[in-house]
Image 1 (cartoon, rainbow, N blue to C red):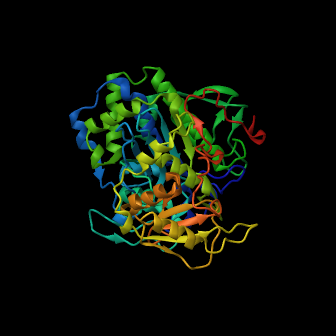
Image 2 (cartoon, rainbow, N blue to C red; image 1 turned 180 degrees about the vertical axis):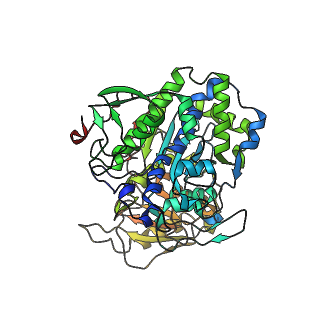
Image 3 (tube, helix red, strand yellow; image 1 turned 90 degrees about the vertical axis):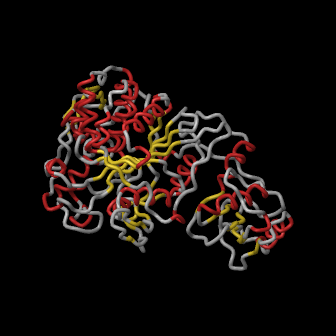
Length: 528
């Protein structure tokens, strides 16, 4: 889903150049761009179907296993991978599942649905990327979608089938290009490098089966604040035409709703994304409250279409494993499902993650519910969970200490890196060294580490100084464990941690799945 900051819009796919339609290269057409808009919600349909039909009974047959395509989970280098998800104090483990929507035109059916004949068999793009995080205790689920045109660094990936090596990108590129660099395992690797969140499974879906799945689900109620017609004199708009109030949409009309930008709120992709989230939430409610998919014949037909269109990792490579996953998802109450978008800001016509995105990723990584309904963890519990990775002996852990105490109003504290280095040495970290380079400005004290194998060591340093686990982060900007003494620790030998802000950023545009009051505001220019 291409989502952008409130009040701002990006050009629609119809308005982008051929080069932009192909993620920076190739000979795409405006028709290809329009079809890719449809794909932006495709992966979410599969997830919602699993959520809604988990209780319908075990109607998946063994022969369906042969329909399922499998691919490697992560094809990036070990150094770019996130550490495995650790169990909480009760021994429960969270689940992270990446949903990927591919625009591949690799079959006649996909070509017919996707259009753009010249792209048949071309390099696919990951135009939908959504992370489903299921909490360790299965009490809640957080969904984070990443705009397809997010600019980031794609790590080195190796195609598991051909052995072809795709070097790490030397410049920031659109995230949807990751799929064409060896398969979905590269998209997983890209997410892990960016977020430091370990991904347990992926599910990738193409055009095939999406329309039939939507028809099998049936009508989904949506609401508009006024009569709306998404249409302009120059041919823009999805064509959606609805009366004020609630209407049950399906088929072509459902596609129009999901594609509508002109007509909702400020006409930005953010408004379109809000409409998509509302549709998905309404679908979950409908499926869980009714028996639409309890008919064995209809459900079997849906299963046939879905399994032919889906690619998963080996860990989900059988109907039994997928059913088991559905049973886990079924445990999450509807009112504890929160859908968000990665906070972002513009870079030209593209976007990049903001500081709020880093905060959102940290909350997911630490299994903090995005709906704010979690019981507050004690400091002892948080520390115990964070330090589950084994660490080396204190005197074997090399730490570089930097002075980051400068602020806009205050000069850096002279000798601060040396003072904290001496503090660490006194605690047994004899390999700690002070960085003598010029001081920088860091609002809060942080500990950074470059690769997963050093996470436990970094957390051990944090624990010794009373620095919270949330201040320990993976970063390719450092070559070893690096402690940056921030402006919040300008003096003294005891660090006083700031109060945790475990509140979902407003810029994530969170929507709860149980909110039945959701209604899209119609732009007055598009009423009839």
